[in-house]
Image 1 (cartoon, rainbow, N blue to C red):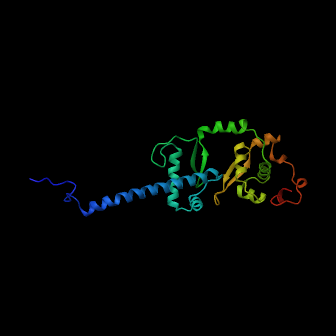
Image 2: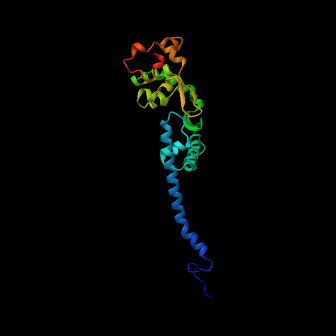
Length: 225
């Protein structure tokens, strides 16, 4: 009686199993490549959303990172779950963050989680009392006189990018998001009662007239002169 060598026994092998065996390493490598691409996209969107001061729609985000809308939508869903402590991009559970990715006015934006609103407000208003920059003061003046006004309109008047300055003023509680334009999706800003308190006035009607303060640069303020 002879014993067949199991290493040479090919009776149970078929073309299908041979193909599966040869394809599995390639499939595994493809999965790794896809995971790496997903991870890279997640980080890119995270970076963009971290500096955005208005909700960003999927089309806008897809244009920013140069990826298909479907891929961006899937990435946003992963980030929401990641920030909420449900799972990370590799499927493991993560720690619930102090911020969240929230859908507002048809777009996505990172916000402080509601449970930390009081803490952050206290920090901004009392623990971080640094003086406003000249750029912040100029932007605040534009909003005070032209409110409600969008960030784009403020930037047009000042002829500079005002994204970071608007975030600073929002953080200080000097301006607030008054409403979102239903057609353009742009957030319109207005000043708060805190500004009146800081200026020592009762209403915006007590703001000084601009005519004596302007030296020919009246663009955007014609109706206030």
